[in-house]
Image: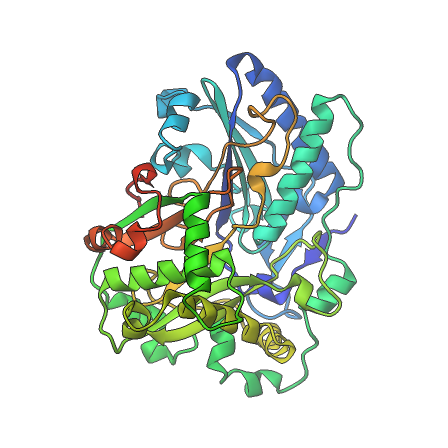
Length: 469
């Protein structure tokens, strides 16, 4: 077995922060012990097949590697799945929470999220899991590092874990084909060769830094300096529901109110609505620059394509640039045109030469130990929208012990995880979708009363909560 695995350049630029998702299942009390047993055995099988998932994330001190370089080190011990009784803390049954729409304020990170800490303060587990039980249900949290996994990696993990759980519940053999990897072919695609002097020719390209989500400004006006000058705010995170009918109405509106013969996806239409209405509510100056940043999985855009089993980040950002006044102007700028701008920006970002230059910048940075984020705040004139719309987390079957239909009822980020960003959550079984959005408290009423926004969301089913940021 390998003693360590070297990670790619898109992993190196990520901070080692928790990247935790939560799946919510109905599980009768009589099956709690069986469910805990199945999940524990499934996690053991998964780590046995994939030692990387039980490894430790460390920052290398090798003089042969650039400062800040992350590696994944094999471990003689492995993390275990935590089993927690959450009723004394939550104080509600699963069915009560389900009727409320599973609000995140009852799912705090302090209770739900398993720690990745080890006895070594310089090393953290690559993964950890926790099952929190309440009367009638179970909250299954998978925690990993942002250094290691993006949404596609996590989806693959969930599929593999669910396959093991299903096999165990059916007394079937372990699924030996479920593998994670960092193959030479994948590394070659995601980690281009670096030639001497290359960083010097690339470091002045602000758009490449932006596509990596990193600050490109001089130190005296860096995002950290700008953030220190901002007035304090009171953030509020809320969930908004869009049912199948509303989404279809929104997409049709954009298709008929944009340039002819241009395709528009549901995600682009919904993102256009969010960008416009958020900028209106935040009430910046019309001339202020406004950009939209959307993560873009580049696995299949590279040659050769990166496999789904690749353990590592393969996401860069598509950037759409505009101004607050232009995006907000519903009377002169049709929403369909905004959606088409978003689509056009993504297509431009997917050009081979753009991807190549951006990856080369990430690979050639001489030092990745102290990188800054591109935006000084998530609550200003720029918006980050991360879409999990096509990630079918709630359609994956886990066996007869879990869920009314062997599938999760809800996908959630625990309260406190990724608050500040905007997420389009995975599409529901009924075709609906929830949006998780953080706003300054003083802007939330203007956002929710925006006529254009209110005409599409399922208003009477709006689910909301206050964030703890």
